[in-house]
Image (spheres, rainbow, N blue to C red):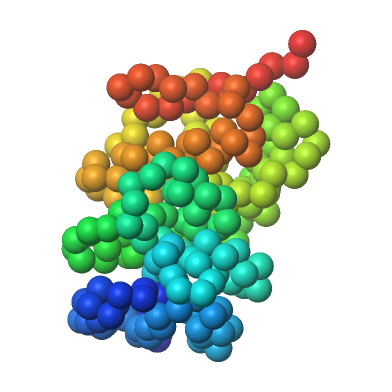
Length: 232
């Protein structure tokens, strides 16, 4: 089986070179480009298994690159941002990014995030090929179809990124149960440490924005619970 192909989009040559060198050492196939237009064109040509995509790019920025690429062909995207700004991250998640990291970051964590994303893609592919029994669950006015990876509320289809879907599916498997950020990281992101708890928070905010703020309860200092709304 061929090694996964990763497209790195980063306009700072030193950072791009370091990422490419490290990923090549991990036996991935890697290509790098340095601006948004080149990224869109290279994504069409390569059809990469994953993109590492900087937000701040000359010409077309990373958010627009993500939006265009995802419209052509869905691909896991790990976004890099120079600012630890929650609104930037929510916008990135909204255009189809699966995860983000704030600069500066460690190469070790970057590799761990990439491996986790690729594992989830493989798992979703296996489930899609053999979904087993129908996986549709209705909780209040929310319907989660795991086999089709579709979600609707009150009859309205909700578009979720792959990560948002996995997070919602796991929460709805345990309705009214508080799940810690660490448990969510372990089961949704395949991480075994707590370095990404803010990633969980950002994805919860994105889910609330799309589904409504009334479905996911915060247990302060602990985690989150899906609270289905019963019909009156």
